[in-house]
Amino acid sequence: MNPSKEPDNHELQRVSKLSDEELVKRVVSLKDASAYGILYDRYAEKIYNRSLRFIPIREEAQDLTHDLFIKLYYKLKLFQGQSSFSTWLYSFTYNFCLNYLNRKHKVKQEKEQEFTDQLHDAPEEIDDTELMELKAEKLKAALSQLEVNDRAILLMKYQDEFSVKEIAQTLEIGESAVKMRINRAKKRVLEEYKNLRQ
Amino acid sequence: MRNPFKELLENEKLPDLIKTKVMKDINLINLSIDLADLFLVKNPDIIKTILDDELDLRDKKDISPTQKNDPNSTDNE
Image (cartoon, rainbow over all chains, first blue to last red; front, side, top):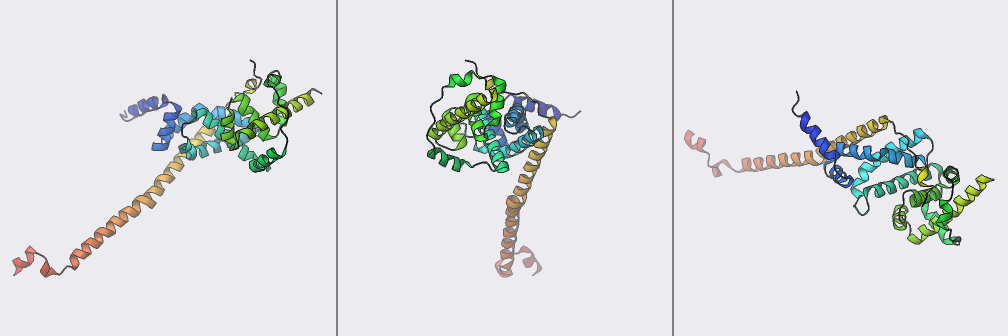
């Protein structure tokens, strides 16, 4: 009988009941791998499913999820608790996916995008009710036709319900630029949706 | 209000193998950090302490024997 095994299990049970924020503190201060394993169990599938929206090939999305969790281990100390851990983590996930795709496909960088934001006139304001009436299956197909930055901003806003401020912090751009991009992405997704009907 | 974006949420399972790989890499990272800490932070401190002690000992030896109160030397006389 190993007497040291029992307290370990008790400790693991105790740690597994901790909140996300307490687990993060534990990982950062003690480099506790078991606490990190609990965070992984809570979020890995949510992150995997979010990355699948950008990388539809399963194996590639799985590799990206692995790489994200390795990078996250180093970056956990940057979590300040200003938002909930899940919001911070999803923001980290969006950035990670966008950077991955930008590197891979050499999509226009954010800075260039910001510059073009200033050049283009703001499109006419589109009401959300028009988006909410769309059929999910067709919306999925229309979203897949969009450029990744447009897709990401729509998913952040309408699926993960990020505020404009949170999107601005995630993309490191101004709030007015976020509003402009959301409106432009809405216009584009509606165009793609209408094209699918034809 | 109905939100079609929420209906797009998928529930794909992530293979257990990914967790095994992540945890293996995390343990390797922790080991590397501990080793780096040992060799780059703790060991130099230990060596510095040993060298300082050594120098202190030498300084003591360098002091002339007449200045020392060596009980053995008086015994021999």
